[in-house]
Image (cartoon, rainbow, N blue to C red; front, top):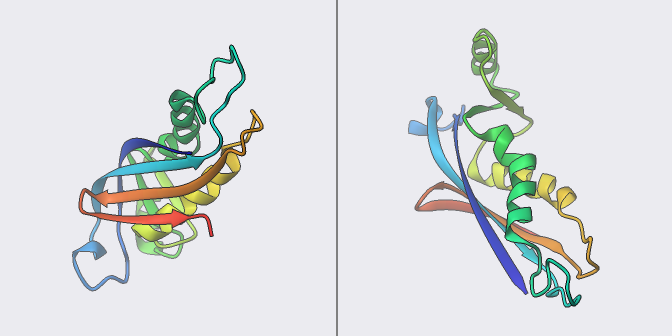
Length: 147
């Protein structure tokens, strides 16, 4: 069985070597969809009976692992020294320094890696993260999937 939870957040970024508009500082209303697989929990009387995982728990884990850190932050590549140094001069600015250029593809891969460690099979129902879909815009997204 597959289940998916969608969350949204706002963040800024830039693609430093891009030849188009994305080389400029700008922001997006991102959406992230987390897809988990597992068996439906059949333990009689369990709060999660009939579920793969409670959707509120899917949200809480994603919120704590990715969304709270990235929401209303500027996601900057560690090699983008000019922007990283500039943002460092802004007192209290929420800056997230990443080891990869913050493209939709890289953000999806980073989110997958972090979330894969966060979702644990606590009910013995073979719970696994299967996919993270990160929307940069409503019409553009990247999928990071389990090989």
